[in-house]
Length: 178
Image 1: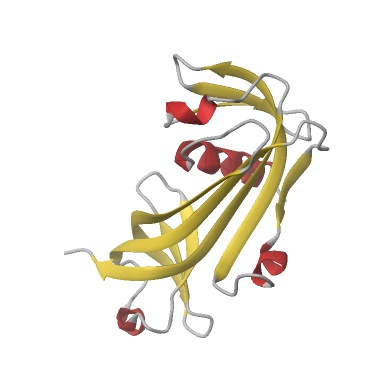
Image 2: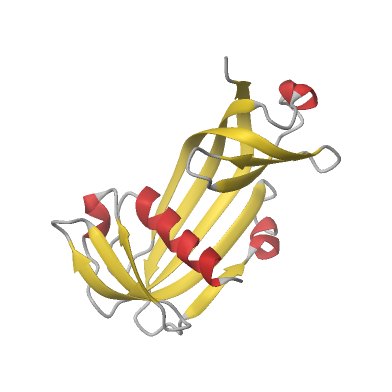
């Protein structure tokens, strides 16, 4: 997995998870909505690659029950709702790991999983007032990100190793923008 994927995984989780508790894993499942432009469509696999306003990319599997799929075209502006789960677990003795694709493993227990990735990073700094976290990746890169939910920083300490797992399931709705 690339360095960018590891950073993106940690950013996505830290910006969307609700709470992290020391020792016990936190599982947050929520419905996400994204307004985006369709970049690519793979009709046979029912996949749609989307680009948002800040050039972030997301590929979603579109359930056969979503009839609008057959009428979508590259360049369409759409609003997509999809299910996403985040697990953040403090693992003090864990070895650092680059982001790795764990999709096949996840599909064994949940056939609705479209994509899953997991990484382990070390917390280097926490600024609860500025709502930022600094962490170090396996390849020794130091990164800092703003955390949207201040509660996410509760229970984290400098030196903690956190395992971050992001699971995306299928799109549950797609609407063309008007």
